Image (cartoon, rainbow, N blue to C red; front, side, top):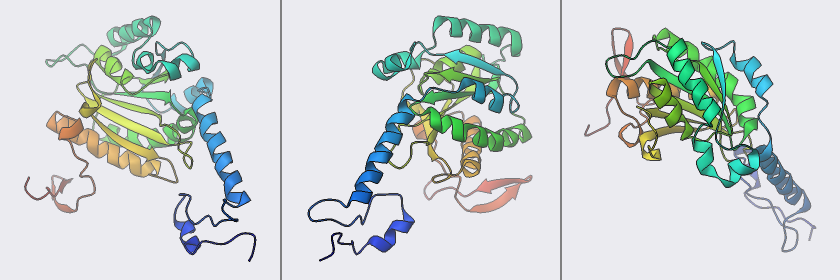
Length: 274
């Protein structure tokens, strides 16, 4: 008997990054898959602890949007961020003051609904700065022109150190944004240390729960490619603004078949029973 016994599903491995059909050596895994697992585990751990390269992100993001503001959460360092998730959901005092000044000096006065802009976009390191380094600029390069073509009023881009999803609620509330979109690195998996997540919330305010948000995840070339993710996010943002809601009340119907066009805008089929 050969030292490594192949698995009959081995031909399926080319279709997935999942660890299937590894074969066996005696009662154990063969050496090569075991080493590959250890390398993937190390990559995931490194992604969690990798610091945000703020200089590189400023250089990448500044040409894209209407200004850039750099902020920090109340988690002073990476260790605190990982041990105290609550601190990553709020701005530190200096950043809150900067954001309030930005709202007063750079944004138009509040409208009748109390809001100043349609959308605030937050880019935060989350649990994988690697994902932000690799995916944020391609995603925004595809998304921002779609929003510009529809006349969205945007706040300056916000680059946040040690940020979590719910930090967008405070940002959106302080800026008076109708919607907030938070882009941040997702918890690394053993085959995806660079996966970006996008979370959008209508009428952001401190204290909202995840039921109020929509999420588009696994944004990376080997998952949902950034140009396709931009199309999906543009649809969700458009529908959130039109319907005045997000979260459990807003389903992603962006891939339903097109039935007709109204004034040049595609009209989507409604699901049965709606």
